[in-house]
Length: 637
Image 1: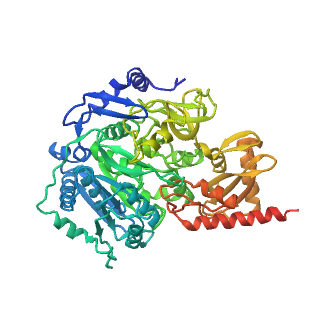
Image 2 (image 1 turned 60 degrees about the horizontal axis):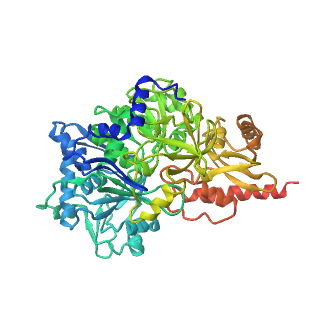
């Protein structure tokens, strides 16, 4: 077990296991505190508190201390839009803008413990608003700028927000996507507590007013003149922000992350897993609407004192060279992206990557879904020619940062494509059966977390009972991730996807990720989503929806090639009932394939809430493909 771990990593893992509280206290000592804690961990199942009594402020540590230490002139934030706009802010400039927003929020009557919603794209003003909110002790709930009115209304209402900060438009593939109509509709559905709507006008058109509550961004800032902008002193466990889970299930949960232990969690992960350092030009290609954007566009890079990039737009617009051009232009040293992003670039081939210099890159890390081996091999071997590592890792909105990963910052382990590697120091996990019995090497079960660590959410906003029942009581005594996995003989963890996405084919349990990875072995496949379909003989069979790479066209010959690939990779147990070619898959805007939508389509059921979907047209395309295949099956002699 774990014989592949180098001595340095082995020592860290040993220290964390033998005395977890001493280990995390030592890690927390690397961050500044206004006052130290009286107790490292107060664990009162199902909840817990870290660094009890410690005083801090997440935004202060991200900005003020760097300026005070002489790094005010260092670039903190680079904003880039798909239209070529570039804005660069130093730490001193970001702090100045954050103070202006903080004063303006005070002028609206917001302060410690108040909540507000931010419905804005990856623009500097949104990031200033996040930091300003945390600075004054208020709590932000960022909603992805593109969610439909019902999803926005649900989050505004559930968070109890008194103020909504919004932009009039978001830039997406050359279009100005209007947001204020969505805001107006959302407030009619769930904005009874909202007193003000502050609008950042970015287009030439006047944004629609929201029943007398609207205020222009510049007027908002002017209103703050003369009001205080100082940071609040917060207890370690005071909420900094709440964020709805971005999973593929229907009803979101509002996860709470705090000032103190969240900071410790994301900074240690940034160091140990990503090797983040002050000299980095760091680019997370995510959006601030997701936890990745919170942790690794905004808070961790600024806590670390490096330069962070916020990009607004699609990675393939105006062309597939966007990512590589930005890497060359700004000397990007580290990228955090999703497997979906890798597969998107893979569709265009590696030729485009040869036209740009990416020698500044030192590592690429991926998360969101398991990084399928074919996508890893394409990026690792064909694009980078093994010059730098492409690292997979695993985490959730609830964990704030990585749980599993290859500890690049401490010492790389051998990469096993498709595995998220090992638990990071201080993260104790297991794979168990539903009755809590630990599985042996290679045996599939449920991935669980055995004890709290800094960054793991300790509660849900206003839903105390749901927190216990959803996370700590499903399998008593451990935190239930909801993901299926197995651990190999060397301790590497292989996540197979959500536990409810495991198919049972003639008594054989096989994960959707395993089948999708097998499809991706074929050079024609860019993306694929699979789900189980009821079958009288076998219980379930695979229903597959395949997106082809550029230059390939659907054909019966290609269909047979793909089926042959599945048989070669997985054997006879992976019975494919039907294979459908589609142009797009239904995915959340954070890049997760909505397999519940695929399942609903093959079961001829309504797809449910699709307000979080990236492209609603993809649902209709899946329906059309399935209907055509169903008719072909019915008419088959």
